[in-house]
Image (cartoon, rainbow over all chains, first blue to last red; front, top):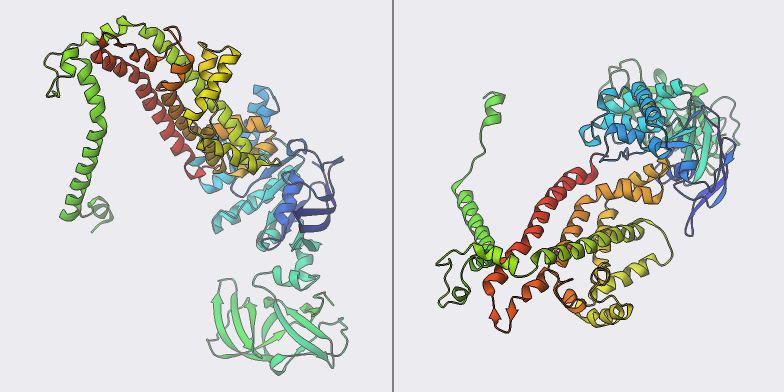
Length: 350
Length: 289
């Protein structure tokens, strides 16, 4: 186990700068998730930590070692790939033993280590199968087995669940998290799925266009997004964002709709701002903002309503079941303490 | 209808489709016969008397079967020696070609070095040069080194083909890069990756290259004719010409010898066919990653 430190890490592809000086500290034993939309540089960053991409500038340290110029095999890491990258011509046992054989471990040692990893992941009955004889979830588990068999200092996961179906993804999410708790290992995990990030991470790094937008625990990011991008990216259904101008301690939005401001926020009068309201913080009320119901999506536990208020479509997530039909009018009120306010020009939280 | 009954019901096979099938299969069978006829003619001529070979009108089957021709041809000239020479030359060329092509193909497919694309194009450009044009310069080189009538003189000039490197490079490119990255992280060197990951996955292509190279060299006539004189280093194609003498040509012996000399190639094709099939199912789409 080891900590990982990134100092001003930069990546150029030719003339194009894709990562702009990323600095991060990953604590020993931490589960860190890099999340962001496609092309934000999260996978590139992970591959740089793995040693599969060169570092254009900056330093990467794993434990006490500066690894900038070390080949992947000398970094004491293991990586789980999106497509599993199991060797198709080797049985599960040999897939897992490959690294150990290269490290010239004795036969008995290899058998013991493979056995141990197989027990942790419940792979014992699959050891003599070929990867093509396994289901997607089993292949994923073998890929993890191949990683843990070596007992590396740091585990790197590159979107490992994106090829699985929704149900299996939930199950594997829990397994990876349980594995982390059992092994107490340092994990850096890349995903574009913010639910995966929220459910698994100790800390989340939200990235966009090669910059870090915010670093924090899942609930910090959810409750206090640092900017509009994080606010919109984290949370499902996504946060409602309402543009308007501040006047008389209220927000004047398009369509003549007035919104309260969050307590404590002190924007200047006339300032152009964006108000953020999470769908669960819009609740039916006798007084508030009236609008026409345009879409009803019952999920069972919650009902998601899309309501048009002042020419803008807002989503409300209601725990209690509402008796309202399409096209009917519904009055919603925001919870003032749970509102978020952002400067429109800079996108920063106010 | 129950699910079971539905499962066993055969799909309809209309008359039109049936006629189409018969016509297309008939056509294919005809083409196959055209391709097989020379082999039949070879064997048919191998088991008749020499005067009957050139008889007019030609007869499809011999009047009298002379199976002893095979043994006589074998004993008439040192065929065992020819076989051995052919094996050494074709096997040597094949082994070197496969090894060198794998190394070159991997470098062109995966390693980054300056001028890679330019070198590849130059390498491929050599495919445009006809073999016949190279014969004289190669002969001059080989004779100056003193390799006339040697195995190395027969093998080395034939053992480096850009075709093999290109064929394997294209196949290597289809192997997912992630497999190599996983191996790199597992601690494998580039050479280890080539040997333990790439080559096993590329067996179909390598088998194909080996087959083509072996058969090509087994049948090669021109180069052995130039670098070999006498019987000691003669390969089968050269040996067969020795049935043509000033006194006449023993066509039936030539055909018997040719039929015998085909056997290893056919066996190899059958054996490697299995390898190629197996490889194809193993690597199909790399779904088993």
